[in-house]
Image (cartoon, rainbow, N blue to C red; front, side):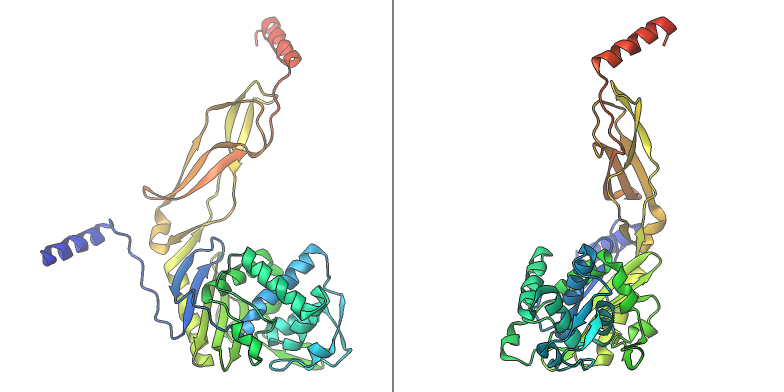
Length: 379
């Protein structure tokens, strides 16, 4: 009986009745995740929700809040940030800010992204929220909004030598979530996270990226390293190829070499096994009854690609279903049909087709005039 079951399973696999996904790599780390950024799909995970100390990978959230403050207009790239005693006193990775030293937001962010500067992270936290404690409250509130349920931040740097920092933890999955939010919503951060070497203080202080994949991994876009004795070696590494961007997260690796190798393995697996397909939707038209316009265009109601296994890519096809007619008034964004993205007969995604513009209903007077024109001129 067992032999018969095995034979049937093999036949089904050969016929393509059972989808096959290549096994992910074995990762030497306490926690790991591979995520595709456009769709947020998790492609690989290992102890993905185990809460662990993240070290300086914490600064992904710090940079996210900085970018949100910049995009909202509450701070600007050229704003001057003054160094406090608390910021200057930060240990670990730093650019050795002096009390009272002034530096632009742009140079602060560059120092955080490239050299993991704890002093700059603290200075920016104070500049945005008034104090590091108030900034950390914002970090935790933002984590909750993003659904980062394994996360509790105690500081903006990831330093974990203070007694209270024992509760400073997050998970590989949550790091992937905040990394995606940073890279996907705020692509300008890549101007800094892709820097290999640069300077601040008018060229007098050199910066060298702690993320070696930026130089040695094709398509690397960032993102952030971290290390403490408690956390081990951590890394959130992102890369983009052929229109698809991935983020690989590794926590608690035993060496720096191991974390880079693990993230490279995960990224290689993702790019070799998956592809992002962006359907090109040709706008159809739907007739409008009693409308000021006879037809309305139907367009895709949402953007974004469809993630497929590479073996499916050639078989991806589109099937469009539209209503033949709608009655006015038609509101902009009103659902008019569905676009089915398929691989063979398997539906991968359903995209709503909606009205591109609004179409008001004809008034009684307009209808009356149309009737008179039809009678007088035969249509």
